[in-house]
Length: 421
Image (cartoon, rainbow, N blue to C red):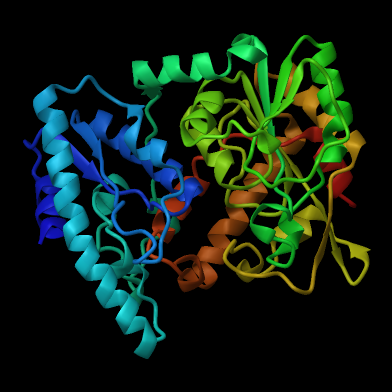
């Protein structure tokens, strides 16, 4: 009942608040949805209330990815009354969720179909991505013409942490003497975290391939912190201006957010923490990429490095890979007949330098503009050929709109390595 009531309030134009429930168990999806929802709330001149489920996580078999993401972000100046309203609404949301979640867990025993729409609350979703069910209904084969699908209207914003939490983090990290205006974060997804060795292992990479780039950053007077969660692969490098937070004993949800919010640049692989850097509008170099349409460089000053792709031992041209069936570009699918080769130390090093060089005056070269045009054109062809493949989950319309927002590109150095013709 509270789900229905909140969605009705969201549709009321004169209602001063916008309620949204990001996906709690996936940090990447949560950050992405918060970013979209906050832009929508600013555009519609409403105050945003980010709600989340949190009760009986073990019993109901779910886990909140990062509690501070839902509790400590500061979007507006809220009155005490507004804070109380949010707390009451959030509690009522959890009560309804308990009954719904119990029902879904029981139903899963007998029913093998997709229950994702009913599993966790999806409040505010339709409004913030402009999902008109009259124009778009995959079950009835009703789809919007690709050229009519709009970009998501992002509004530049400054999401902060509550003052008391900011000070707590500063005190916690005092021993590092971090120059935040020269802080670079590095995150490399590997098989150690969550024992991830056999789960689409081509997404993982080796932190030791980044050592020369870390040394270069330090020589350029940057302070480098490796982020992520324990356990992670040990790096064969030590320096007074390098700290391996991912293997430290000070890890906390709030520190994860604080470090990203305060860094100058973020260098990382395609995983949830990448989206947290996007949430705070950080310039990003995405390394060891294996997905073209998801987690592609978003801003004009973002860059990426894709892994080399092989089919039966023969390298594929990146332009040919773009044209492969969309099953190869759906991040939920497991790719079995292709292999991916990690970026080399040289490739990471030269691409990092290219990324740093373009920050003051970001622009795309001719080869980069042509590649982005090809990417968007082939995405349209994927859509027109089989729109259902692009709408495999409830939030797929969001993904289609995000593809049109991409303004960054792969580095020139990387594109030359991936282009065989």
